[in-house]
Structures are given as C-alpha cells and as structure tokens.
Image (cartoon, rainbow, N blue to C red; front, side, top):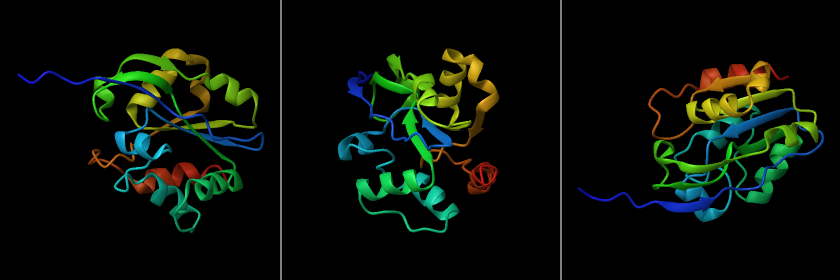
Length: 162
C-alpha cells in the first residue's frame, strides 16, 4: 500500500475591502492554486467562469485583474483554512488545520452574506463560528471533481445579493 504524502501548506490572505458585501469562502487552495499563488488557479475549476459569467464579464487574465473584479463587485474571497497538512488537493485528507479569523474580516467590511464554496468550507465555518449560520449559504463546490456542480444555484445565490 502506498503511503500518503502529506505537505504542510499555507493558504492566501483574504481579498476584501471595507465595501465588500459578500464573502465567498472556500476550503483550502488546490495544488494548482498554490503554484500560482492565488485563488482558483486550476483552469478546470468553475469558480471564475461562474462568478464572472454572472456579471457578464470575461475572466480577468491576471491576479491583479481578478482582485480588481472582486473589489468592483464588492466580493470578498478567502478560505476557511489558512494552513494545514494536506495530500495534493484533497479536502478529505486535511489535518492539523488552522482556521481563518472570519469574524475579523466581517468586522472590517460590510459583509452580510457568506457563500460557502462546497461542503468542507461550510462544515468548518459552522463548526468554528456557529453564530454566523444566519449569514451562510452552502453552495455546490466549483471544483472539477464535483459532478453535482450547478451554475444555476450559484447564479441564484449571487442574484440575491443585488
């Protein structure tokens, strides 16, 4: 039996401003995201196509362009895990996780809704911050590994913010 190869990895700083109205919260960056040092770096991940498509915009080609897009639409972006031991990109393998200080970002912004990108982010957010449950919507993961992804569910959640 092959031994699992855990890597200790760190996530990214949150992207937000005081004008942010919604926080999209993932679980932890994939290997491809960690390689390019920014969120949703796997071209097969549906995140950028879905969110930019909702606003009828093309996906920005650069990290700076993506950050500008997020700020313009008052979207904050972060992961619930800031550091962990992980095998590849597998959420199921995560151990020794450090949890993001989500309430600090909420205090520093106008966020009143949290959209969780997948089960892991939702489960951990509710586990560590149960008082935020009224603000949270669990959405299907945009990961290419999720066969049950629905852009319609994402569009409905994003539409409720307008």
